[in-house]
Image (spheres, rainbow over the protein chains, first blue to last red):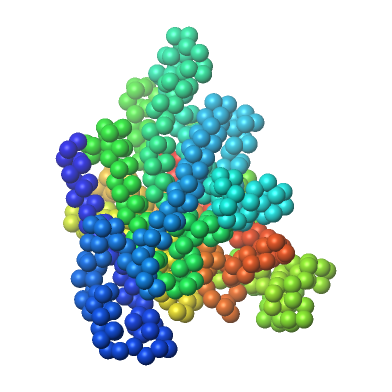
Length: 308
Length: 310
């Protein structure tokens, strides 16, 4: 196990560095001179320009700039400064609670609804419930999130008026619709995965033995069948938590929420690239770290992985 | 194929005197593609999605057949009309016939989907094939590269790199999406090749003195390509969704291109007053992505014997 952890960690560090480097490179691809852009129409003296160049490390070679940036991120949580002089960390701090709440709602939704749908479909295989779940899964998994977002916004927000259609002012209620949208596709995948795993488990010998011993059906399903079927589902949910942050960009833009994803959208429109890079690097860091944890967790849950 | 052989081997090992199988199967039954076609023919999802797909592709290639107006013929005087007999989907902010605009949107979306998928299918599968066939450091290097790209969610990566480009057309958007999605195909092909490379017929070909290119072309690729092709169709749907999403977010295609993403972006500002501007392109995006994804999944299930148990 220790060997496995060390190997994973050694693979993890270069991945982390290069992935963030790729995102950071975007600042360099930006056309034009940022200092000139900052000055706008007003004349700016040579000294001020030089001082600003120094302050933003603009005269250093690219790799040194990147190194200084990542050093700042890891040691002080400094994600750079916007050209208006506002620290990006400030903006991240403001948006983070909204994005985390949204992700939490989506996560709970897909875990609970996905599991329930999967169990029902597997236990009542080939019944009406199973058919219904299967048909809805084909549709939900095949629709793009963009379409699901607008579809729910139009029906339940605008036409029926059950949920607010934009913003987060109405508290928890305003997170329900975006949360469902963010969770939709993954809910389908969880249910589908659990269904096929559970069907296989319910046909296995140990389940037959448990049934033969006179155990109640519900107990057989939850204690014997589900226990083994849940391992892949749990790892999928973990990995999905990481992907979810990328999904918030779309969902928060559609529902006009002020979280990190929505901030990326607005910063792109306003060409505030430092904010985009800061938030995307944060997302990538989170993504890579969560995936590492999931991999290690998987190795703990399933010994076969360790001895690969 | 491996699974089939293995299960037959296991079956005959456990049952020393297997009952003689009635030999009424004709010659063509043996082929994987024939089997696939037979199971697909009975799958209603496959039939529905194929019909939808054919309609959408015709629409993308020959929009004139469907359109009722010229997509660039716009009069501000008839801006934002409700759907009517003259304008089936109403008119947009610029006073263009919305039905025609939505029809013409199919071209760009499907173009991006097809360009990206066919490129990563060729390029990714080739790399995956090379990695799996030669193994060793070639494989290790390639897998580390895919690890690096996998560390960035493709939508975020595309978002960041498209945001710095001032002018973006179909090819720019497609290129960035190719950069961030080819590793999926490479890994898929690699896994698929691994599952056939240890078969006896490959060893036999090698023993007969066949070179690597011949072995790959004649024996490995035809047997390993099945699952990859199914995923490629699913992926086309995902890419079309991604293009619409990126364009909607303002980093994809730009005016004067006609695109569903741009229509959605525009319509979002009139959500309360003119929801139909949102509804129509939305339905078309949804149908297109649904058709590609569902057809791909049906194809994959039919081509991949392992997933048949579902």
